[in-house]
Amino acid sequence: VYRAVTFREFGSETIARWFMDILLGFGAVLICIGTFMAIGGANYNVWFASNLLSGYIGNAPIAFYGLVNSGWCWYIFSKAQHHIEATAAPLKGSRAAALIKRRSRNVQTFCLINGTATILGGVGSMITATRWWGYVILIPVIMSSVFCNVWWRRRVGYTRAWAKPATFPALVPGELVANLEFAARAEVTIRENLDDPLE
Image (cartoon, rainbow, N blue to C red):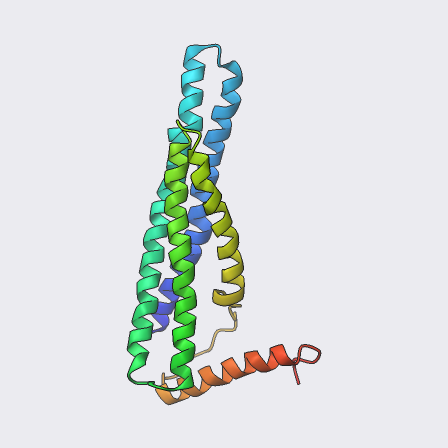
């Protein structure tokens, strides 16, 4: 269980941070070089290289990121569905089952919108190389990125504790349910007592 959680967390961080920064950053540098080369566009070779760099070649890493991120979003979406299905029977009718389902649906909503947006962003960026209306496709992509950022911060993301236990405790379903319900109640209580949350 800990290994599976670590794999999902590490994969999400790698794709959302490293892959995005490297691929989108590299594509942006190529596009910028091509844009500056356009100044010397009177020379055919410079003009041609400028169009390639600011067009298909520069946008290719962005489109590749769209494919990688969408594939990962599909994987996480599927895992969240498995969590719902795995807890439906053993925890049927309990508050814990409802909390797991709500959390999983929040994750799925993020994955669905984020994965779709990055695919559209990749397609739109490739179309902009030759057609102006490719930028129209990018408008909902930009809007969805704002939504995903807010949704992640409010519904999906959480603060990771860095304190590492010396040994992992055994996973006891009854204790997990009690801890999950306690954490959910604590969150509500803190929101109700913002003036003195520690109380």
